View 1 (cartoon, rainbow, N blue to C red):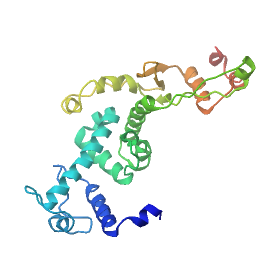
View 2 (view 1 turned 180 degrees about the vertical axis):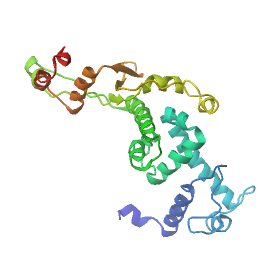
View 3 (view 1 turned 120 degrees about the vertical axis):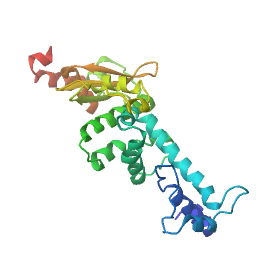
View 4 (view 1 turned 45 degrees about the vertical axis):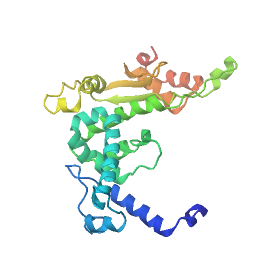
Length: 264
């Protein structure tokens, strides 16, 4: 335990732990707090042990405000960062099937909400087992690529001579993501996010084209716009080499082993 932790009064520490245990309990479909605490005690009773009433609200209603705000803020951030996925589910089902279970397993531990969804692609792979899992996985991955594409740092690029250029290992910038889909997901995404989630609760989804392999790049341009580009398989494979890090010599050696179509 750190020196700071040792100086924290025990009563304050217990109050903080209790507060955290209450606000991180999921709210119900009507955005109401659970009627019982994690200890199984009615909140009307337990809250009174820690909180005094205000002129207008009882202790349990006062803590309920924080419980609601905690979840509304986190779920709203996920809605913003995963717009296609939110539209595929609708707000209610997204919260129920993705938002709540994800945030219960991976509670936020970073000061910036920009990192809130960084483990959601992992959660979908490991914990989401519905029939539409492949589509939802692709949706989550592409949504998150847009977030990463905007906030990723830009690596410096400096060369002193031509020999250094031939031998130096090059990597794609962190803002660039490569995707191989069995459908043309990104044009579909553009159409979907052009409307609010409520719209798609009443209207049919647009057609998701595809029954083959499609290759896409999501990247950040010089104006800090995150964009996508459809590429062919040869371009995708070449870019994939730089994703793992390659020198010009290594790329040339790799190309010599590829088909004539690839080399052209």
